[in-house]
Amino acid sequence: MKEIILLIQKDVAIELRQGFAAAGVILFLFTTVFIVFKAFAELRQESWNVMFWIIFLFVSLNSILKSFIQEDRNRGLYYYTLFDPVKVILSKIIYNFIFSLILAFILLLLMSFFVNNPIKDFGLFLSGMTLSVLGISVIFTFVSSISGLENNNSTLMAVLAMPIVLPVLLLALKISAEAIGIIQDSSVATDFLYLAAIDLMMLGLALILFPILWKQ
Amino acid sequence: MNFIKTYWWKLLGILLLIYAVIFGLGVPLKHGIMEVSPLNAKAGEQFTLSIQGYNSHYSDLPSYAYLKLDSVHYLKSAFCSPTHQNIMRASFLIPTYLPSADSVVDATLIVDNRKDGYAILPRAISISQDSFQVERGQELWSSSNGLEDVTIDQSFKFPFRNILHETVRNTFYHVSLWFAMFILLIVSLYYAVGYLRKPSAELDRKAYAYTAVAIFYGILGLISGSIWAKYTWGTFWTADVKLNMTAVAMLIYFAYLVLRSSIPDMDRRAKLSSVYSIFAFFALIALVFVIPRLTDSLHPGNGGNPALGGEDLDNTLRLVFYPAIIGFTLLGAWIAQLKFRVSRIEENDAFNER
Picture 1 (tube, rainbow over the protein chains, first blue to last red):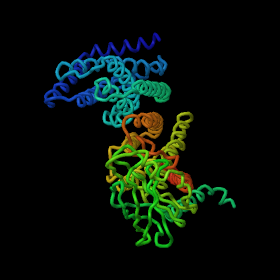
Picture 2 (spheres, chains in turn blue, green):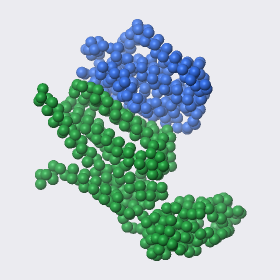
Picture 3 (cartoon, one colour):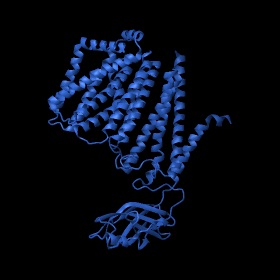
Picture 4 (cartoon, chains in turn red, cyan):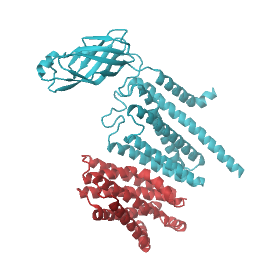
């Protein structure tokens, strides 16, 4: 546990040291939301929902992509001698999850400020968002560990990650559509159950498979 | 003798596929009703219905037509006059009142004769009435289970399904290709896990070969499904969830191919692609469970469509469908085996040249 916290602290320290990276991501969010605001004269509820998740998907793809790039090979070897691989991937996932969650909140603020805020049931939206962001960050972190080993190819990362993230994204869209009030469905609880099950399954797979990748 | 021992499964696969092709295409469909006209009738009139049958022998022997309103009330035709083996006119004396308080009632048409067995067209016509007297209507319409004496065709024929008609035979090829694809993917998953437990070039070659054949089957399944959809739903591609799930499955495995082709080093390629294929397979499983929750599907088993099972896949269809799945799977295993043996030889040659 101590080691995980240590690794997260290290990631936060790196993030803060190169402050331009985090600032760049937030600027990316800002410009995208502004483009959406200018491009749509009036953003309908359905489009708001879709835009929110599409923007979030690409921003988190960009920000999580670098989680294994910023580690150069020698430093990776150094960690390998020091830490258990399960702790390394777990710390990466926790760090990326928190970072993506902050990004999602900033996106929500920016969307509400510039465009509008159609959300009717905030509790439902935020809980659905948290679970979906968890799933997305687990999948992106793991896929970036695959593509990070292979010359940090960002196209490869997108091609590998997008189809896999689809089940989480579809459930995210459905739950937030319910929170906005576009659709009415009595089976929200089951959706949450499915989402949590997918998150756990992906997390378990990442924890099992990462040590094998790490061994090279 | 040795030959049979070693290659029995290839032989079995080929025989099952030949069986599936001969019986799947050769066995005729049962008697069915293609269409009727006119589509509307009024209570109290003498009504003549022109019926177009399929695989029927109306001229050979007397046929009977029934209009069925609900589980008990029906009306037998006054007389039926065939004009052709497949065409006949049935006259009904529709009573003045219907056994219902609705102004329009849908009636199911049943045509029966001793040779072809019975055929059903649900909601064939609608009967309208101006005034209702439900109790009087109940008296006027025959209300027994007299329809139990219809003939059931016991010979080996495939069921006639409205809309599907002859294309019901595609079940044996389109659907069984999908089943075979999933079985091959599971085999490939088994080899990928095996590789990660104990790395060897042979296991990686096997995992890759099985995935490649599964992708090939997936493409064939998409093509056969598209053509089928054109005939039954009227379009090659719809927003149907199962279609789009398949598209995503294909995307995942194309990504797998891209990943493999982007890594020159053999060991790393094997390790990364095995890890990815395991991860991707479970994502696909998640997708199978998630997607049906989102919208209705035109496919069987979703949104009120009957599923594979029950009356949809009847025993005569099963008799060809299951062997076809086994046949396609065995054929796929054979192709995969040839593929990984070729790649083994190629890799050994490349190794020797160096």
